[in-house]
Length: 120
Length: 187
Figure 1: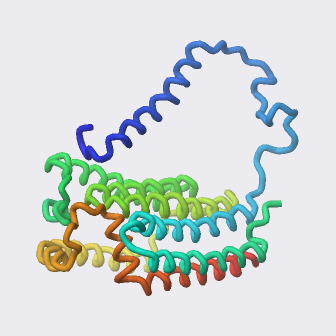
Figure 2: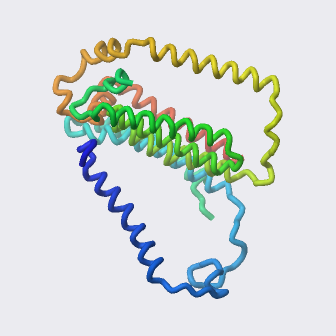
Figure 3: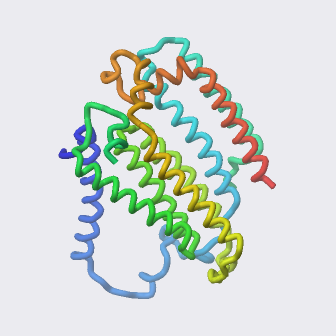
């Protein structure tokens, strides 16, 4: 709007997406009745009775997922400028990007077979 | 500050005082975030403060008209690397914090001397370099319709034509990093 007019849509999106949660909390804060009871103060577990403790031990597999994500995020960032300039350049550039992605698919298969992507 | 603000000339620029105000504001946020990383006792707070520092750096890139690097910084550093650091911090039990800060050892003195000298040398080098000369020298061999092609398109064109071999080598570096990290973390 005022500064960085290329970012008009972004500023509008930012303002609307900040205003909607604030409005939601305000309206529910005004309209909701406050009655305290023992069931309201227990932790929510999708409608069933809460089982076990609320604090769990952090597991290594969460870290493995974040690690694999970092490497593939860097790969994705390299694919963005290739995608932006794809229509200007020709078919050889497509082959180059294919080689790039293929080498990283090899890495992905390695991570898969070594069990870095196991969730349970 | 004026020389840094004209470093990447573009059609669209911020007016002068707003640019300077944002520079000072982001610099303050950066320094406060850095102090927060080092001085906060709870390691999770300091990991979040590191996220603040990386976001401030991303906003600095927006001020310098490099929008692609700003987005890449936000995606990779804040989105992936900061999350990784946060997960590594959450591994530590809360009983392992040490609480005595009052010991100033000889190593602390040496480190503060080295860091202060690096800071002073960086400040004098940055203020003495002629940035105009470097920018105008590298602008001579660009694509002709430079202002019609956006920044990331230029990066893409250069990456696929001039820097094709480094582009493929980057994929090999990422592959090696992935295999190494998984091999180390599985133990």
